[in-house]
Amino acid sequence: MMARLSLIFLLVVMLNACGYDGKQVTRIQNRVSEPFIAVEPGEHELGLGGLLWVNRKPEWKDGLLYIPKAAAAGRPLPLLIWLHGGGGHAEQYRYMFPIAEELGVVVLSLDARHNTWDGIDSPFGPDVLFIDKAMQHVFDRVHIDPERIALGGISDGAAYALAVGRSNGDVFSHLVAVAPGHLSPPSPPVGKPKIFVGHGTRDKVYHMTGSRYFIVPDLRDDGYDVTYLEFDGPHWVPAPVARDIMNWLKR
Image (cartoon, rainbow, N blue to C red):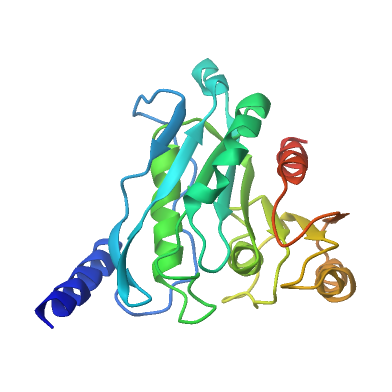
């Protein structure tokens, strides 16, 4: 009993540490700024997360930052912020890092504060704040092109990227959704970020017809520039599709 109370207390401390006070939060506050912290290219743990209580057990929640060698030249680079699906983890997307190295894209792969992203099964708040904090962490270390900042993900992360991304279209120039479900923007949409939607033809979690006949047409009807890709694959992001996403972001 005491151990469980201690973990609950730790959860409260962690949520307070990221600035969450229980009220809904939908807006990203940080903007691209001049980096002032020197960091070597390669993979880095964020060090912004910690131990949280998830599905009746403690789980480490943080994220990974990959900085390509191209950052050493000091020119602004694209940033892809990647959100996992429900029950997923940031480290599952390490396979994207060699592609990011080749194409000169900074990748920030994040863990949700719980099993999945807030707004799906709870009010928007802790994850928005963590994304905001992680973005500032990147801006402090890497020259980022403000015209090429993408919020993207798969499954729950894809739905979340489309929802939060449209509410922050003045921050995110691009949105990426692979095999998305539906989630409405938590606050009025701002701006018109470019959108990439991908869906595997063998997806048995969210059938591709949802993207083809509903999500993509609705986005286009709302005035968004949408690139749609159907690929031969399951409920996942194959490496060739990850490459397509990064090339699209660089265009």
